[in-house]
Image (cartoon, rainbow, N blue to C red; front, side, top):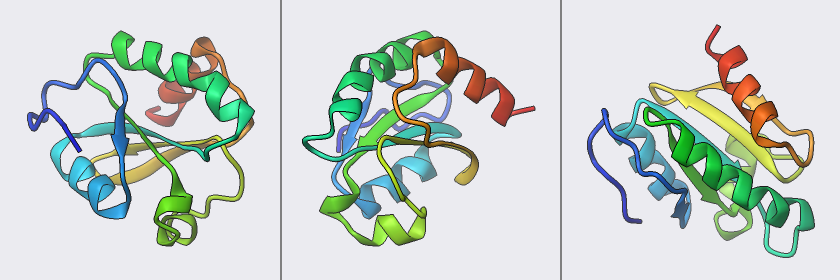
Length: 118
């Protein structure tokens, strides 16, 4: 995992996480984190990938990451992943929002982020 360790600056592209340990480290390093849970071969997951990249570039105070829970099955139970793609929004290490409604465009993800912090 390659991350920027400052809590005030976020990478401008999604970070690929290998599993639970990487996710925990990322959550400890960054205040606001959006994580896409995906699986290989998922067409909706592939189609949302460029949208997630745009979200990462548009939000200077948000770290965006992706993780395949099949690579580390405890993630499935820990975060109750029932479908992919699932987006979880974390603030200070805690889940404050969940979006598991299939493909979402950038405007929908921005609205989700705003609603989760209100």
